[in-house]
Amino acid sequence: MKKKNWINKTLNDKYSKIAKIKKLRSRSWFKIQEIHHKYNIFNKNDNTIDLGCSPGGWSKFISKKIKNIGKIFSCDILPMKKIKNVNFILGDICNLNTINKLIKITKSKNINNIISDISPNISGIKEIDNPKYKKIIKNIIYLYKKKLYKNGNIIIKVFLGEIFIYILKKIKKKFKVIKIYKPQSSYNFSKEIYIIALKYKKH
Image (cartoon, rainbow, N blue to C red; front, side):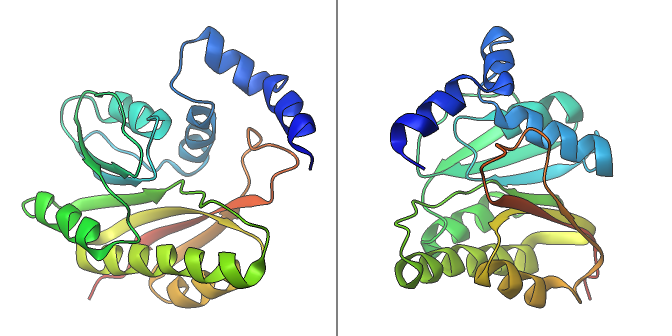
């Protein structure tokens, strides 16, 4: 898709317009809202790790759901304005040091949900993009094995193709329920989908 056409489509998108009117941080608010309403992910006492969080659409939505009881630990390579109940780490989850920071900061917490809306910079060249995205997925898997509480959930944005197949193979025996979902608020032209894995079988 040419850049001009992409800009026109995103500017004229109804969810972008509503997000602007409601002064939401991003239109991604609607995606996590749809996922939550369909699968009832977030509870008041939940602790959640939000990866690729900036500018904060998902973290803000979850903060409203958990009230003052649960806690959110968010991470991104871009800065994010402060949100109630959110501890923010500036860092790249491709870097194991960042993952270890998340593990350290959540040491005393049971983590009920790990969610990722990360969309890496895409060159369009499979041989370059796939290894980069696979590294992100490997670190997310490493993180949930270290931190996710029994019967916890993960939500991961992926794109159809090799990486989608790769992550399904990695997680399908680790969770009791796995769903594939594309929110209505995703751009029609986007190949993004969400893997929603519920009830982690922690041993």
